[in-house]
Image (cartoon, rainbow, N blue to C red; front, side):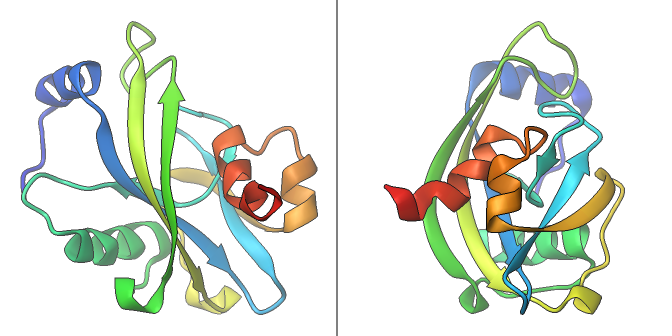
Amino acid sequence: MNFLDNETFSTVIASTPLISIDLIIKNSQDKFLLGKRVNKPACGSWFVPGGRIYKDETIEDAFKRITQDELGIVLDKKDAKFLGIYEHFYDDNVFNDHFSTHYIVMAFEIELQDDQVHCNSQHSSYKWFDREELLNDENVYKYTKDYFKRDEK
């Protein structure tokens, strides 16, 4: 697996879509975990945990790494429900506002207990939302809301 330096990663973001995994984490009270993002894109918004897949990393290995990085617990993709593929388009990127970011996202839902989750520094805070609350909160990013509107289509 290859971790890119900032200059190379900037060129990749400017030139091609990124492939990522988003995690829709549900607890036993039917609430969903969101984190307030500290990085662009979507900085300052409530968003589901997730991350990009690295070159030469299998989806299964990426799933384990992302769950470890984002939730503090290693989870297996076979224990999650695949929700589908989504596209996210942002006007900015992690480095600046000079070019856009395009993600192709594989969304997975998994049920965890509140005390199983130990979140990371990618978010300034975390909160459990019920479905209606997050759909009506203006600070929840529109792409996160899309995961919860899927039943309305």
